Image 1 (cartoon, rainbow, N blue to C red):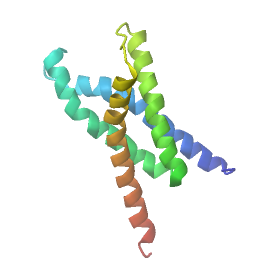
Image 2: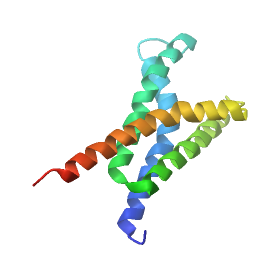
Image 3: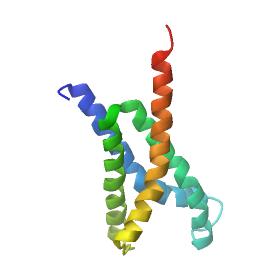
Image 4: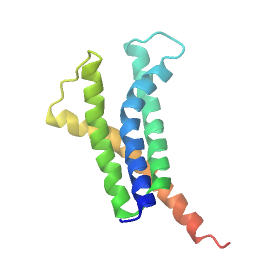
Amino acid sequence: MNDPVRMVRNAAAMLLIVVACPSALFGGAVLGCAASSLDVNCALSGVFIEPFLLAAAGFLAALLTRGWWGVFLMFAGVIVGMAALATIAGVIGRPVPIDPVQGFIAAVWFGFPVAVGYGIGRGVMRLLATRPN
């Protein structure tokens, strides 16, 4: 891991996922409520947009990093992103009281689409790598 380019790519992949978690929640709600006002009913439509945003972040991260280290960074990015989400919610005045069970459920809810996107991205990269020139 002494290669500086690889280190930058790994850092960029993790940062992408860290930023994607709060962006998917807040951005998903905004995209889901584009045609109406921000209320509880339209926020539920954001739930259907979030997985696609998270999967896209996982896919892009897969293009940047590889190997078991990349998988570790993906999961670490989700955990740090979830902490960032809770911090941002507290800073804007809407703190989210989370117990360990709810935290685990939220990590799975956000981590699964990222992992699926990452897996698809690694599969695409693998197929492109085996293609004859």
